[in-house]
Length: 178
Image 1 (cartoon, rainbow, N blue to C red):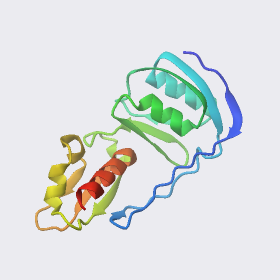
Image 2: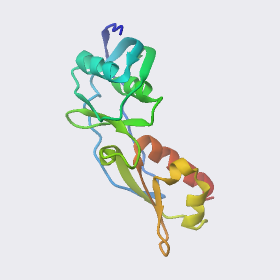
Image 3: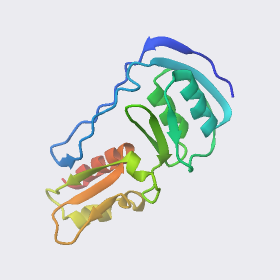
Image 4: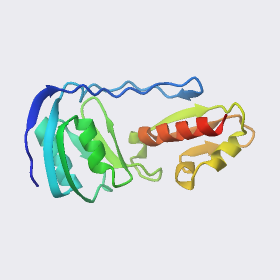
């Protein structure tokens, strides 16, 4: 494990989720926990993902909490990246996600059967314009279908998924329903 240094440039990356006219989503305030952190210069060589996340926590002073599913190895180099960007890249090989809360960052499995799925997921409702809700669900790949619900007799679908998967499903649904 090779750790370099944190530089002192301010973090210019701020995550902002745009709401669409087609979707109704549960509203959550974005946390500012990582906004003012300096950009990070760090390298990991054949490091365990848990060890890499611990080093990031020590480097930045931000608590990073993980669930039991986090495992794997990572070799990667970052220069001038935000904490959010570094975490996203480190966990990218697995079906892992993270969410920034007011006092900590949670990293866990994005699987709907994970006990901690509720910590990473949000809910959106979509009312189709041109297609029947069932058709939209059937057009999604099986991987994305596990995050989408449709009930017979209703005119909408619900999507319960972590933000990165939520965003992808929303984009796909808008493509299908035109």
